[in-house]
Length: 80
Figure 1 (tube, rainbow, N blue to C red):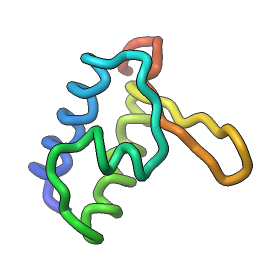
Figure 2 (figure 1 turned 90 degrees about the vertical axis):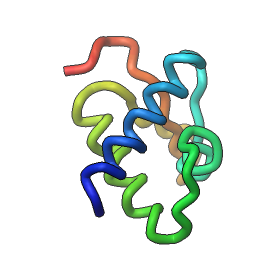
Figure 3 (figure 1 turned 60 degrees about the vertical axis):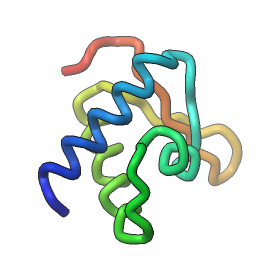
Figure 4 (figure 1 turned 135 degrees about the horizontal axis):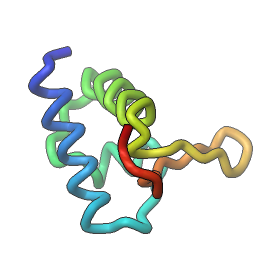
C-alpha cells in the first residue's frame, strides 16, 4: 500500500462527504461512489485501511444497523 494512494483515497472520501454531508453508505457503496479510482481487489484492503484511519482521526464514523450491515458517514464533531 502506497502512502500517496492512501492520501488520494482519504481526500476523495472527505471531498465526497463535504459535498454530501448527510450521505452514509456501506463499504461497497463507499468503494463504488466515494472514491473515484477503482483499484480492483487490491483496493479493498487499502479502502479498509483508509476508512480505519479516517475513523481514528474522528472524520467519519461507522454505524451498525442490521445484523452484519455497517455504514460509514461523516462525523459531526471535528477531525482530531
